[in-house]
Image: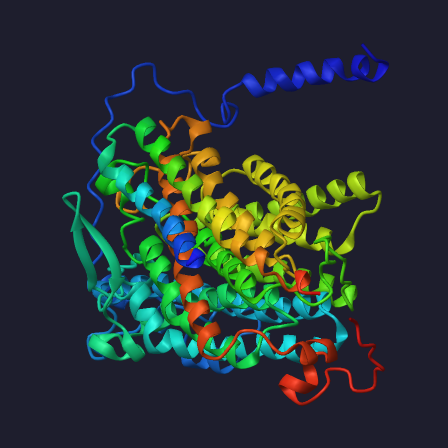
Length: 62
Length: 554
């Protein structure tokens, strides 16, 4: 389940950056939205997916 | 004033006086006081077919005596004529000029493609050297067979997806059969998603000399992306899973993003459609090749998990040493050599459309590599009191990876800055991946290619100096690619950032899903017993170094 959530969050960042093309017309507005997309994608990878895999890491099993 | 200057002062003054006298005044008669108005110059006499046919050519007797100084070879007699009875015409000469231009560009693109192909050897020995001796055969075989597996997938479908709708590639004479891009309309604009011509290189007229040259060059780029992944997953990747994963990457993951950036897809058209600079720019592939490879490596490494013994029970990383630093650094040199194909070759020609920038691209490449190796060596020296060899090698590669995208758009100073940042960045990124993410990457591929691939993409939006001119436009937008530090309004930077988020948000997701499916169906990881023994015997059936006595490392 966490894998699916992680993938969706990661993909959501991409969607936000594409939507910036229509949600904002100024360069500054688009920049803010794209940076938001970047943070969301990184959160999906590091904060959700990687965290999930670290919970069951091979070195924790001893 | 010194004695020497004093002695020569009269001589210098005399020389100056002489230089002010109009040249030739001593020999030519004085001009008449009132010269008549100059008559209009006669119109140049047009060259006729008779002039061309009458151009002097060496006689058969002269040629029969040989041509030791080369002055008789390559003359008017070598111009291909359409009608032997009429002899050479102006049309023949013009056609020959056009063919010579395309021939130069074909040879340039092919030879640089051959250089890129040789990078596979560099990757193979860098990765094998950085792994343990008990996995040498397995690591070499992955690097060896990724060439064939990737090429097969790319020939079947990958090339068509990537370049099937690229349209005219002027430097190669047009490539007219590659003219069908699948598009959707989004926000009122056409979004190109994938190409549709070129399956098996015969589909819809793609059995074409220019298309085949383009295929060779693009194929070796794709294979570079694939071979990045083998390093990150080395020493624990099941060989069958590697074959399937590499096939899917060569057939779909790589070509889709490459289409968006290079094949006429939506990223390339961000400038034309949304007024964001010249659209997403990536001259030779920091994003398309290296970041795609590095990000796929990250996705796979997370799924496959770290090697046994890499982390303690408390999660503290252990260093697992490289078995042969000599071949690691030799491999880095081979890669640096191949990079002269990677970046300068991306002009797809040496004649026309600003292709003489190849000199600038080549120098930028070597400077950034140098700066990267210095950055990494100095960082490690200051931080750990030793100039670490493997990280210096990774610094060289990081500088080269980072300059790959901007190499065609920046000046030498920009290249050095980009390279030195890359050299430091790779060290910090390796530590972050190792200690914070706890993702095991035996060769540093995620940091070298992923992190620095993204840095290279970003750097265009900052350092592109607006001096390049590849036929007057880039991605269909007039003018030169210009970054924030050279007067752009930030639109180019936003286009580059959208490319970066696409790599992280889309390419990562797609790679993750593919490799997760493989993990569920065939399993990505070898058994613990095989891993401890070393993969050479269990997976490949033969040791890489059969005369070595190998220690089993728990």
